[in-house]
Amino acid sequence: MRKIDKIIIHCSATPEGKDFTVQQIRQWHTLPKPKGNGWRDIGYHFVIYRDGSVHTGRPIEQIGAHTSGYNANSIGICYIGGCAATKNDKGEYPPKDTRTPQQREALIALVRKLREQYPGATVHGHNEFANKACPSFNVQKEPELCGR
Image (cartoon, rainbow, N blue to C red; front, side, top):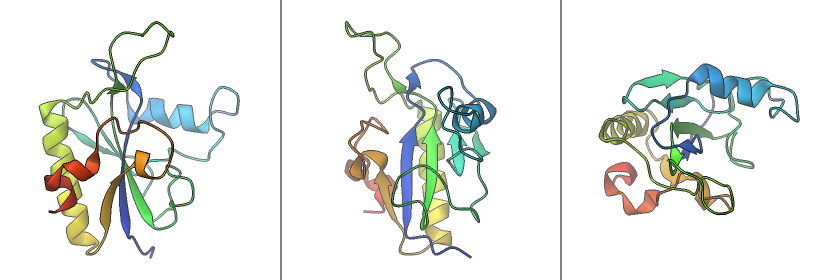
């Protein structure tokens, strides 16, 4: 049994308003490079769709592949979205908190459940551990996620 001390929130870094599935993310993560990451499975333990439904990715018993240096003792949650619907002048989709009301509710409920299962686990955004915008919002400013 893994000792879980962190719950780390991610976004799929996909455009606002577009749906993606666990299977699609699994393909992104498992396809050989350069088309994918070449991992053995999806990196996240949970994925929250735009409709608020929560889907299982990698089993919790398995170490994730979502935050370099922190995977052994953490659970990775990803919500679909995290980028604006249109590209900027650099041809990139800029970071944006695109969580739907249903995703917000589902994320809060999932984090609450996981914190009950893993007392003492702290909640973080991926951007606290990597130079990335992900999850495109400041997790520490959301007390309903951090238990404050």
